[in-house]
Image 1 (cartoon, rainbow, N blue to C red):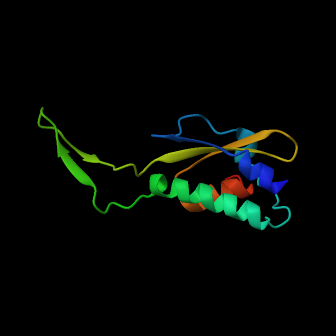
Image 2: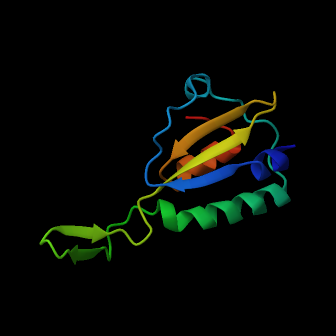
Amino acid sequence: MRMRAVLLAVFSLLAGCGAAPDERSATRREATAAPLSSAALDAEARLLSQLAPRLDQSAASLTPVTRQDGGRSLRMNGRFSQAQIARRKSDGSVATTCVDNLEAAKAALRGAVQ
């Protein structure tokens, strides 16, 4: 059952998670059920490894860019993103959360809504 919850996770990488969080899930922490199976842990590890480059917040090797109009900006190189994670809960409803780091993504996948 936990494997199904992990596999039902939906990711959409956004420049920013602008949608308002679900008020019920924002104030509620779900109890962690049974430990995850090895297959579920493998699936979770694959998902987290795919998210890792996007959620990286390291400023190392950011590329400064000077535009034609003289303005300057930094090329983010695919980093500093956020991920909206949706997870089906045991009662059939869906909890969503916006994360900007791997620890929060792991907690969201495991059901600890922040």
